[in-house]
Length: 404
Image 1 (cartoon, helix red, strand yellow):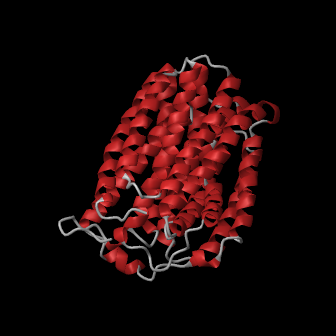
Image 2: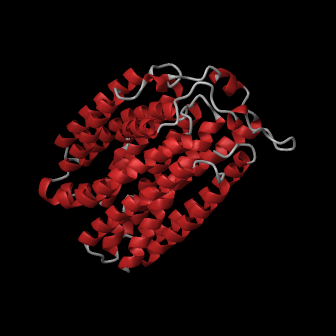
């Protein structure tokens, strides 16, 4: 299918499939997702990490939030470095080296108990992890269906994240904060093994990388800017609440046991959003599904104002988890279709991590007086602005891309 004569041209990448790409295999997407997840799994269990640093090491809200933010800001820098490297390195040996270093940094974090040194260590961890994730993103962007590939990524992250937020907070009082870093190290070790199971076909690069980059139109660049802005705001708004969701529940006098169970089950149910992306692909376009998802996101986030009610707290977590895992794959899919080389998707990883880091940092400052209603309101504003940008970008791409 080609563009209509009166439609504004975006770029050949939007309507054409890459000439050399990995086949549409779910097991391949799962392996790539595992490797990518290892690079920033701390994001998926951020609430457990922040709470563990507070309860296990006696950090303040601001200190714990800063450690988490440093980890993700480091990943943002790493992702930006990856943007410059992905066309110049062989992904398999590069990933093996980066993940090996990542494993050492996780194990090294076990011996640190002061906020300053731990912040520095986690910033370095984020830098290495961000580079690793950026390299994997460039491979995922060149698969047959990037939306489904990134959907598998979110499915795995939410599935493992559910286990993390359900069980890790209950283990911290007994084993201390070190259990958090041991969990991260274990996943990294699994990813190192997974690297060698990924077929060489995934190494293929489109021969037209340079040509695609050169002929990207002004409209395509503007569309990419909208998608990148939407990704930043969406991640920042969601992570601002997610990083402190355990503290939010306790603020509204919910029991710690209930909070852990609610977050675990909500995260697992939330994986259904990524499952829908894998099932649907782009057969219904992106505009309408993302519009519904953003309306549910705003409603679910507003529900946290009534977190004193256990059912409302649980439903709000479920709703926002489903839409979180649903929207992000589509945003990365849009970026992948705008640039077949995978470089734009890697840049999306940078903006995503920048948003994920900015959320906890801003939240830690807003919660100086435990003003959770203010935090919820700020998150709603960020998500609403994100919705405007992503829907504008989705509308442009939907006008030209065939439904798959």
